[in-house]
Length: 307
Image (cartoon, rainbow, N blue to C red):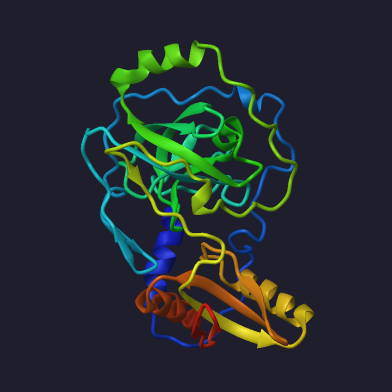
């Protein structure tokens, strides 16, 4: 999500310095992201994006690497359909630049996708409510296993997933030639109204794999990661006092604005471990550990999930 964050990650992975840096002013991902302080009364009437032919962005469609994984955006006009979890991003990124260089507006019908061309268009349908929205892809993300698209707050509210924080969806690429069909579908009677947008507060955790309806043949499904997934963690510190652990977690969050995941406090016996993860491979965990070390001058410990 976001060109500036991608650049920070790439530079951090190549850095060799160990000197601590002054704490940045911006808080970290999830520490202050969430709904707007005041939800517009007309948010349900914000119109869908209208697909049109646009030239692909010169720079935003090049291969890129985030957290040790390389993504190769497609640059073609081929149809695509996939199923998985949709998440959303809100006030933390509102007003900041997207991967396309455009300013992110959480009240516009836009989205972030890992490989769809920038710009392109997609129809996103909730597999629970049947509600659909058409969004314009102008950003990169989400970089979490199991999530296939990051919606603007307005699009998430229309689909009824702004409150839960995520939900199972079908993502279908659409084109300018589909504009009339989509307009007719939008004018048809809608399914039952989606739940109202949530009050200001933290983003909820994603769904488990068992909550996702099974896909039809020839469709893509991104695997889900349950809350108790196995794998490797980066332990940043361990404390006998939960208050000290939470204070340390909050300080780390302030000093890692590039971090695209929540910092956990996990109880283990008499200790409260501050950690990141899980990561599927040691290489992925080591890449983040190197970035943390260059940013904070501390050495995270790679540990298994059962420790």
